[in-house]
Length: 346
Image (cartoon, rainbow, N blue to C red; front, side, top):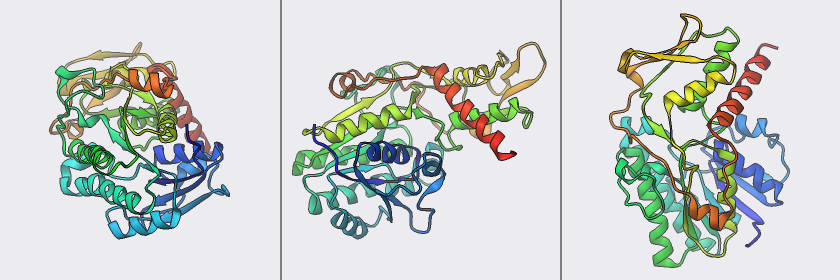
């Protein structure tokens, strides 16, 4: 294992970037985190994590789609590890502007790989890839050898990035690794993601500030893990002398319906389900109060029906070990949102 002394983290204000910064700083590394030009260089996550004034954390504005800007930054920072977490992270947005997703996730990765090759050739580059590069349900569970079959513009943009990592590793000997991340959630998830939408809605329902929450496809099944476990594995990847790709997942699939039930159960609300399709509802047991509704507006044009990963390689080589089951993950997220809701009116 090689110690990380100076790290460059793109997308520092996002969930993964902020958690990586916290872990890197705790390990004694200096961290340079990037943010979009004109955006808040800190963000609410770094503030919640107590890193807003961290002495070994500095911020740099970067547009990753600008290859020259990437080269200048890498030349200036001279990192020994680069974690590329910036990009377009919402599958739904990719349907509205596929080309923007390809640029944000694919072109940016290519630019950074070239910058590292030219100016920090011994650095270990770690990409935050996505399970959306897989698509066919017959291939579940997915591991590093599973054929790639992206079904969405977002999945295709991440496949472009993932393939670039492998190509630059093979063609130029770059220490470039891809972390194939299955759904990794936490209390620092963006509210645009269904898990955080649910945890905040449950907190508001519990406090009497909302009545229900509207969701899309309740049957979609995903592999939900706890994000801090995944960034720990990404750090372990960067510390390795050899580059490689790793699936990071729990190996257990749960539907959106399951996650909703677990989130409400975290505050003592049991749900009973009635109806089918767009008419399905989740009703609070012992009452007639509808807590979950289905809204066609939240359905995607296409959705991988089952994404569940086999992380045996990461367990064996990185010591990766998921720390929370579905109930524990939902409870942690709901409790954090309850605290935020209460603090907002204190």
